[in-house]
Amino acid sequence: MHKAVRQLTYALVAIGILANVYFMLTNGEPDKLWWWTGELVFFVWTAIPFVGIATATKCLSKGLTSAFILFITSIIITFGGVYALVETFIVHLDPQSGIIFIFLPFYQLVHVAVGVGLALLTKKLL
Image 1: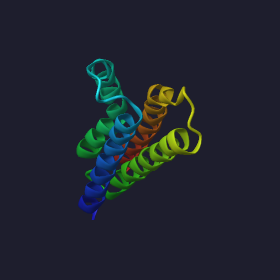
Image 2: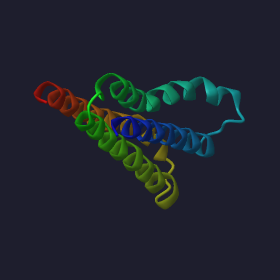
Image 3: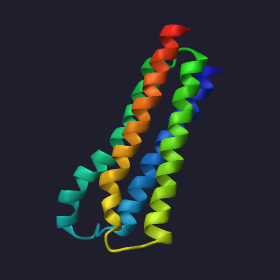
Image 4: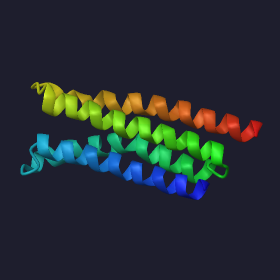
């Protein structure tokens, strides 16, 4: 059972990364070479929370409880992130909407830290 939960977590991680890349490409200027030089840093920055949860899933989800906690964390960061991106770039488009790519990964990292902490705690207690 925990193997299926891990696979779902990995799928959510992929969805989250693809959503970030999609919103960067559709709202940026990918046809200009200068855009890519600065945007690569943001690609890496927005992927860090997802890579973190995928790494934690690989290392910590040997039991069902910790796998489920990391799955819930991936749901929060993926769907919360997609919701924030849709709200920022579709519903309330503003010239300064791109700033979300600075702050959203930080908030996602906080959620990942809490989820990994809970997974570690359950792994020690159970």
